[in-house]
Length: 114
Image (cartoon, rainbow, N blue to C red; front, side, top):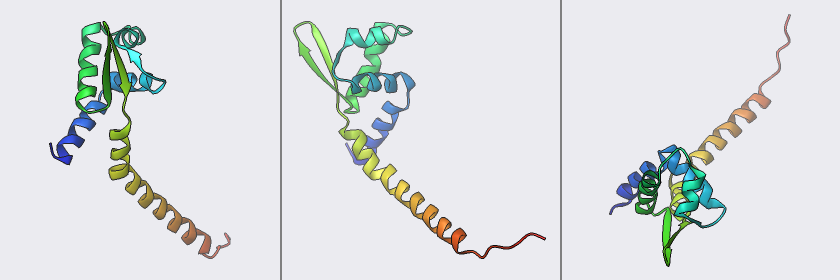
């Protein structure tokens, strides 16, 4: 899979609010699928499992089976890579522009109103 394909899969996974909610729940630590279902009572178990499958395919969730339980772990590395490639450079550019604007405003002569 190319980097662009992986990015598309990641953006798709992050594009749904239910999947973002699941990732937020996993930030606190690994959760069983049952625990995640309880945190989203508006969705049935099958729907939660489908969302988890999308997250797993995007590399954001790693599944560990312990007996009958399925433990879901957050893998934040794909999000970090996304930040490094897309968000970080744009944020640095925006901060640089704001810095130039601030210096320009501060250097401008003050005009008195009549």
